[in-house]
Image 1: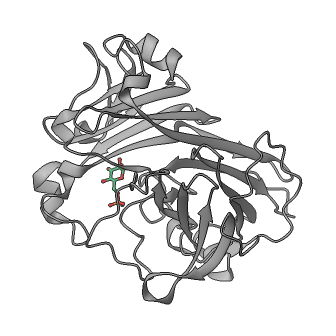
Image 2 (image 1 turned 180 degrees about the vertical axis):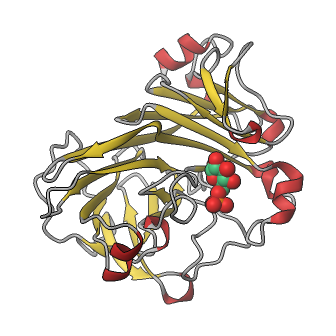
Length: 314
Ligand SMILES: O=P(O)(O)OC[C@H]1O[C@H](O)[C@H](O)[C@@H](O)[C@@H]1O
């Protein structure tokens, strides 16, 4: 890491928590808290914030930070007897000063490598040795890239199984002006209806009430179009077949202590995930999951009414 303007700099964030600030030459930036290994800010080269973080977010252990990109591991949701979304999002990560070689095609200097290993206490609640390496990088054009590498380091010959999500909170102007393209006609599990399986009907997905769905085996590109902002987020993913879409809407919003009553209007979670088919790693095996985000003016995407064209042209 360097302390130059372009690159990565370790400094203090809210409540004295350590954070790494990434800066690219054209002005894009990102912030990553070591607490949770969590991205809490991603700004374009005009300094506009692209991620949502609640004004009521609590930057203090043991609560996970409400917003940005929490890491859900070793589980997404609450299937096994672990806390909801696992513990990676409320553990202290370390800077990985000597990560194993990282095949990368990016010329970026703005990146940081973090590592999470289980503590003695963690091993009591999830008895598996692992190394979780997370690279967060900004491309020269301002794209935000997260790569997770999870390795089974157990010496006892035991495999382990996990589910995973990059729980990304996008900042949007007004949820009623937003639509998602790339998920129409897919099957999903509806968390609001006992995880029952349905098939999405109709055109692009829009929002007028609470949504909590796990879309299964999705395309690798998903577009989130904010009409009022004239901005399109493009999410690209690899190793993560599913995509969770969540907005708590007004009633749930009021039930969350770390979320403002009206903030649901200005956020949308679209999360690259591996949920339906849990991943199993034998000792020595490694899994890799990537999420890449870009934000482009909507006018760059021709044929907005045709999702295939949008996804091809972005
Ligand atoms: O409040 P949290 O534990 O951060 O979870 C927030 C939300 O995360 C996901 O999107 C789940 O699908 C939702 O069911 C959950 O309410």
